[in-house]
Image 1 (tube, protein in one colour):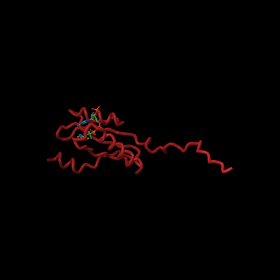
Image 2 (tube, protein in one colour):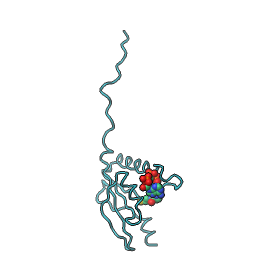
Image 3 (cartoon, protein in one colour):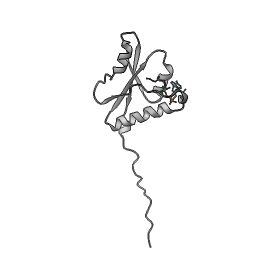
Image 4 (cartoon, protein in one colour):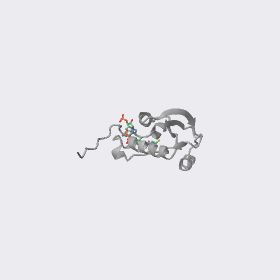
Length: 119
Ligand SMILES: CC(C)(COP(=O)(O)OP(=O)(O)OC[C@H]1O[C@@H](n2cnc3c(N)ncnc32)[C@H](O)[C@@H]1OP(=O)(O)O)[C@@H](O)C(=O)NCCC(=O)NCCS
């Protein structure tokens, strides 16, 4: 029960306000492994960047969680610290730099299509 209450009330422990918390993403099992999860976290990161966040973080289980950990790594998340809950559950923190998502998109080509001369 304490774990459930903590899970429901967890609002993160961001080191500073420039961090956003990605709190639990879940994909319908019928479409798991089809890229929905990668697209979902990418969309969320882009939204957080637009909202002004410079970095994002999340927590997931350290142990017996290889597939999820591989998923986050493949999506560009970097492992940082491990903490242990009062029940002894080890949680691994991941961080992702959102700075690249702040960069402006491709600039307009300097070679714009030339206007046809009316002559
Ligand atoms: C983790 C999760 C969000 C990934 O979404 P997804 O749409 O399956 O992910 P993608 O298709 O973009 O990527 C697939 C990769 O995710 C990983 N993965 C993790 N759990 C998976 C699952 N149940 N089924 C398929 N792939 C899974 C695999 O490493 C896989 O890599 P591979 O293609 O090399 O085998 C989704 O599987 C899920 O909802 N899992 C249960 C809830 C969960 O654990 N959420 C994370 C909480 S922190």
